[in-house]
Length: 342
Image (cartoon, rainbow, N blue to C red; front, side):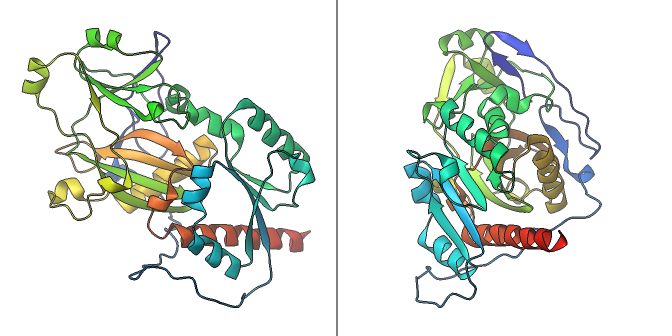
């Protein structure tokens, strides 16, 4: 499905992984994606009432200091009161990083959690990594930069196989609304109406439902979202030009209460998702990301990955607070074991 068009050049790349799927854009046969042993999704907490902050004595002394460098928008959405309270009960403390001071003079930190753009910050965090190898950086800036470019994100993952009807996206993901724009080009000539550089993806009918697969370390969670509607061959023949789609993956686009065909709404198989997430963790070098994927309409186990995002809007993921607390807590325990082994 995936084709890339960047600065007027087309590139092809192929990947045949040992897990048994064929990434023809990235087309994957779910039944073949069964790992030899899954780690599971970890404990899940189901809340039936709104969370309320209550006074609670700390169960443990402070174990883990997480320094964070986030945009104001990301801080507001991620550092919710519930997350901070649950974290403190496990001895996890979030400390803001002062961007006006040298990073090496701050802390000490056990983990640096960041999502800032720009070459200056990338240089700062890379230099910090070299000097403080005992600190876990989530995630390495070089790996993050790779998926900010949709062309390099997909290199090694897809065969070029464009049809006449294609989805066009901006090449660069820079956090702006423009970088998430989607256009449907009904013919090749209409591409001249769009501003390059672009990435082209073959349009695949998928029943109007997309699956957002959130990955936090070894834990995965999946939510459904409304997506682009199916397009018939008759419609393709009658229409030309470019059509801009609204953004489709917001939390407001949830399909949980919609009356959908079960074959469309059924979640991808858990073993398949575990194997895919594990493979991408290794390939991308990331631990915090999400995968946007669709199921080909009329099929049961043919899926396409259409986008990958670093440190996405985790507030849209059910029970994200508990997932992150467990993730950080496991890191603290692993560090303690490592110290005892020395």
